[in-house]
Image (tube, rainbow, N blue to C red; front, side, top):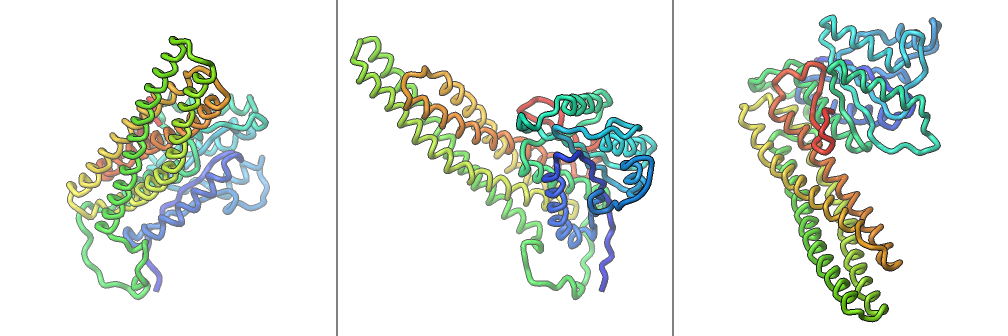
Length: 398
């Protein structure tokens, strides 16, 4: 028996250097559609030129794509990194032309949602095209000048988590879900399937969300304790070395004291490397649950989302404190004199480990801020031009 679903269409636009992100977007939508179809009777269809366009004739290849894919979509998802694309004769690139067509519909009151993301990650030197990169920057600056807010991400996992949160918010609003609980209905045969993660209800999701936050907070706590111990130990080692120099002890003894510091750094590096995957895993699973909670929040009284928000806010604050401590300690480690080969190697390894941990902390803060917006604003209109979170690390709108 066919299901009665509302179909929401999203158009995907990006140059060729974001194939991984386009595939990840497709994967995330397939994952979320399972939940959406069951909870909201909504399905999101992606329109991509790779799968929806075919050979044809037009003024240029982009014109063929325009003719075949049209403008009949509800969400525009644009992505850029280091490439801007090839000029079309009507715009600087196919991606820019697709955005301008979508923006024209928005300005005409077409009810379209605009979601723009820029990848903020290093590019291999051999892959850098200065002209293309300059065009990307020009386009990005033009968005800021027009008051259009955009998103940024540093890696594929962060991109996936942002999509889960942002798309949950967009679907809630575009689907027109009522804030009142839906009436009970008899289960259809196709709904009477074996239980799975896709059948989780609000309370199940809250349990999973809180359990993952707790695990992540425990990992953050262990890392914070390690950082405090490392800071204390390094101060003690520094005092020992300073005293040895002042008392003119032998070079061999001074070297032994210096390498003692290296041993302390090596132990901290091992602990940081062990905690990093645990921290990221907990963060990933918590944000997955957060996105699904956002889909169900409209069926409950307004105070229910605040239950999730309280725990998330505490999580965010602990991550912020740990990030500040990590940055300060990394700076101190890097400022140590290059006294022996052993300590130089230990400094480098520890700096890399702390940098990795710091990136996870910063990512956690950004995602927590996005989830808090979802919990508080899921029934409110979006910012004028789409999702408009704030990056606490960079201090810029994203």
